[in-house]
Image (cartoon, rainbow, N blue to C red):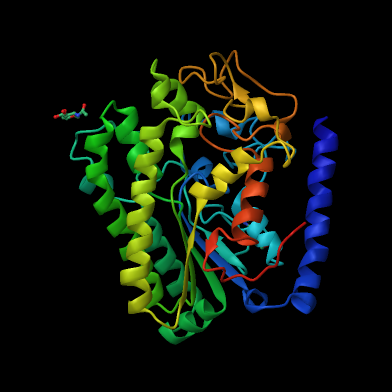
Length: 378
Ligand SMILES: *[C@@H]1O[C@H](CO)[C@@H](O)[C@H](O)[C@H]1NC(C)=O
Ligand SMILES: *[C@@H]1O[C@H](CO)[C@@H](O)[C@H](O)[C@H]1NC(C)=O
């Protein structure tokens, strides 16, 4: 199985190469002149930074199978295979984005600065010692500094950087989800955690302004997922009150919380970012409603309808999730058909779900406005 998966991965790479040559001649619309992607974010987009940086013994599970099982081998992605950013790169006719911390890689078509576990706010600014903070200091501020250092060392002048960014796409997020996760896992109630929203949103907006100031012409800023539908929260914040759940079986309070973050972020994009940079295309990626659309049409998308809120890889409980035995730990196993599951490990999604998301967002109506014009996929 491993070797057939490896063969598949190879085929994907070969297909990608072909795709790349096509892209340059055939692609229509404004996306055809995207020659590079620069990405800041967390585990939703990390293609291998955390595993380069994690101290020995930490985050061991993502360095090993079953992480990467669909791809053929572990890549540092928090999934069984590819992420949304990979499908995006592929659809733009570009190679997969290399992680910034991966030494000796090509950065000709962009860089991925996203690090799993990263927060939007600096730990020092946000947590004030009040919340448990796991390892990770690669906040958005740190990633932004990497981005600037990289651009300065790669191009001679600010004008050259500007020129490069004119033909690039910059992705800022998803980020901020971990700011809330750490607080919520630390048993802080939702009312308290809501107080973090203004600071988190402002941090994201400030980062976008710096990138726009450098000359970025296309920026995508995703919002948060409906976290009340995730196995980790359904397990840790489960309730005996049926009224705490919506018609899809998700926790209402947590989805409402994520929606509040998203509303504030969208308002800041509309009222602050776009008026300040009228010549740039700035889009909000609606991960919240595209995810709900997947849950609502799971069957027709090829997912097992009865397993949309169960982790494919894990152990125990109604949602196949137990934080003491997470995917990759002793006593856990991956499901036989990850492509039938939405959730990979209770926190992150499967390749199949990320593919479905990327179609809805990058090819559909959940990128607002649709600045890529990649066309609908059947
Ligand atoms: C990096 O790549 C260069 C050129 O491809 C090669 O000569 C060098 O040995 C590589 N270094 C490492 C550490 O792999
Ligand atoms: C949330 O926590 C704060 C601080 O501990 C407390 O004052 C407040 O009453 C709590 N709210 C709810 C709804 O439990």
